Amino acid sequence: GTCIAFRKYSPKAVEQRVFEGPLPFGLFKVANRLFQMVWEASTFAINLSLDRAKPDNPQLVKDRASQLRESLSNLGPAFIKAGQVLANRPDIVRADYMNELCKLQDDVPAFSTEKAFEIIEQNLGRPMEEVFSEISAKPIASASLGQVYKARLKDSGDLVAVKVQRPEVEPNLYRDLYIFRVLAGLINGWSEKQLGCNAQLIIDEFGEKLLEELDYTQELRNIEDFYRNFDKDPLVKIPKPYPEFCGPRVVTMEWINGTRCTRPELVQKMGQVDDFIRHGVVSGLRQLLEFGLFHADPHAGNIFALEDGRIAYVDFGNVAEISEANKEILIDAVVHAVNEDYAEMAGDFMRLGFLANGTNVQPMIPALEKIWKDSAVQTLENFNFRTVTGKFNELVYQYPIRIPERYALVIRSLLTQEGICLSLKPDFKFLEVAYPYVAKRLLTDTRLRNRLLEILYKDGNFDWKRLENLIKLARNSDGGISLDLSETSRDLVRVLAFDGQLRNQLVMAFTEGDRLAIPELQSLLSVLQDSGAINSTTILSQVPQVSREILKEWSTRVLT
Image 1 (cartoon, rainbow, N blue to C red):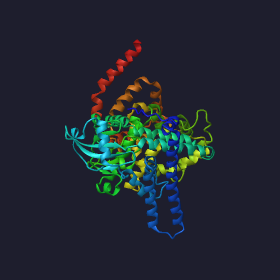
Image 2 (spheres, rainbow, N blue to C red):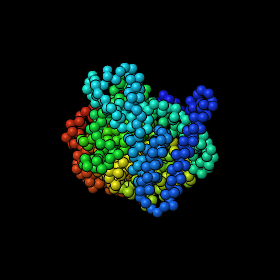
Image 3 (cartoon, one colour):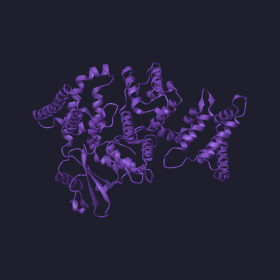
Image 4 (tube, rainbow, N blue to C red):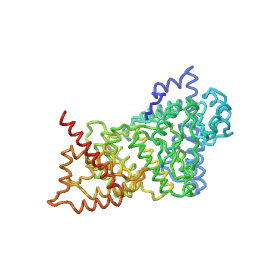
């Protein structure tokens, strides 16, 4: 699927929208809004200072966390979005504040139902009673940009969720973005010098994503893409969209019966937490590495645990794309990290756009090695994104690194999902779940053959143990299907018939060190047999077909 927003963001367009009509009127609204921001910020700061002068009191912390949440709610969608991000960043926000900010994910003050029903009728172009046989009198959930009602379609009887955009949300967002950009301009020189980033550019990227979320027509297309990508997936549920009951400010989709991850204690009571976490991690990796279209706002309010163990996603206003080339580079980066090839890792940063073309990456190589070999992440089982991200942030200050907007969303998405997993299982280890999936992709996807060979060769020698470990890891993955290398075996035979270089590599591997690697081969076959990855009967039955295909391709090459 593709994500092309209709509301193209530009600083000039924002300024024009803010100052539509008489200039004094526009200036007055901007000044009034700026005063509101300053008032909320100064009130919070004063109370925080007064708290510090008092003896330690847990209730004061709770009160201040509650005040912060209320202030962000009062300031509107842009600030609520910021609070939602912070609610999933335990590396930045202390636990008591984080718990309070989590309420911003599905418990924002609602606007009137009368106004919501008016918007629904305007967008559908007909009275609601012609569409719905019943609809909830109050919103079931209320978020930064809209609120959701539970309804039943009159024609089919299907239960649906009807998402309605807040009234007057656009003018407020444009005004906030204009003020943010003006303030960012005041600190731009300092931010470029001290932080190595353009403050106005960060605001522009934030604004672009916010305006995309306002486009409910685009959100409908996003839902359709996700629904198609995960069609018939046994582990993931995407709500079915109803395009005939959607409009620029209304989206109608299938109702999801499940438990939101904002209530981790309820998800834990459902049991099978390990399976649910695994389903979530694998589905997230599939979005990134298979589909190239990923949910960029998977906070706890947007993820449900279903009774049958599946994971369900909602709210597709904020999604992002990764190109086929960049998907391959991301897999390269995983391969280079596993192989501890830090020079190539530095090259991956340039290929992904974190560094300008032609940048000398040599000074970065020792820093990357230090990050990866840091005591907190020196083994795969201890890997976590919070630690690595914290260490990587130090590089941003030392080297000319700029995180492209799409990868800022990837990092945020992974950090958010890791935060949810940690709330469900405090000893959660990301790579224990993720690496088996990556191993399966390397073993079964013919497009990744070169990456697989990179992993299997260590210091110029074929590493049989690495291949065994990959198969064992892949056997434990959870991509909705069991590990089946039969197709991979057939592809290998076809490739060996025509790829002399690969043929020579495998012969060298089998005869390395002036001996035949028979013990290694026997051990590998034992692992394959135990994993059930290759069915010898199936392979033997397909020998004639594969032989015919090889002969046909060989004759075609000879004739041409």
